[in-house]
Image (cartoon, rainbow, N blue to C red; front, side, top):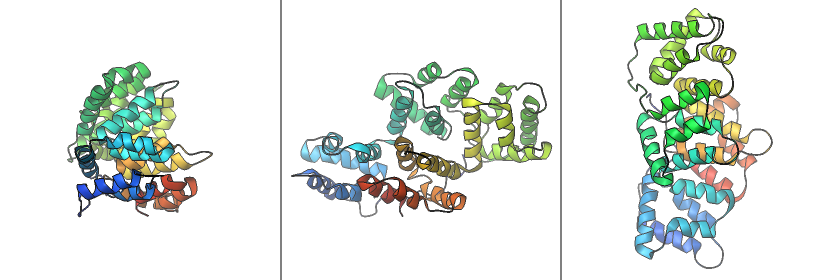
Length: 318
């Protein structure tokens, strides 16, 4: 896996779990809740530090911090607070379950998680999913998907993508030719051959393959996928290509998509900001400005309100 960029949230140097627990307890005591005090703690601590706070809060007061916060908070602000207190693998597992439960499946949310996480992260998500829901993630994904898209999800579940940084130019040329022959060069499309390359090669290797493809086709790899595939499979292939090319730019696009048009896709917005805050949100911010000519924080200010807005802005680091 290539270097993943720069986050906006990191471990707080002056971390004092006792002081943080006291501040959170004070914020919830008495009449009303001091949401700003909660934001000032949670938005400026790493996830590992937040986990320490959760344990120390229960040790100190004999109370569950998450339950206390849920009883005091509401709406989208509560959603982002609870997301911050979940361990990353559990948050991803809960997001995947949410994307598959009820009427309809949110395929784009599934792709966003399954196609962008490292092998180790996928393994952790599978374990968390089993522990949290007593269900098998791969089986659930298979029951919610079909065709080659189902095969792509099964492939992602194996957590076996090559993550070597080295590039084999000969293999890149061979793979580019294989994709060309499976798509543009024939009547009908051999999706399984395209899947084989996109699902197994490292992101560095894929970038070399895309460059090789440019030399044998008049189309970019993205244009070829759009003309040769459709629906969820097209979205899946494009998600992998987008992440292989530039993961922070992929998330910048997902964050903008969450705020574009009528209404805000709040769960998508929260998920992208919370899950990338310690990984590459800082780089995604720069990509956002480059791609859309307006700071991410300005979009968030225009699209959200209240304590929810203040928390997101704090995480993005205006």
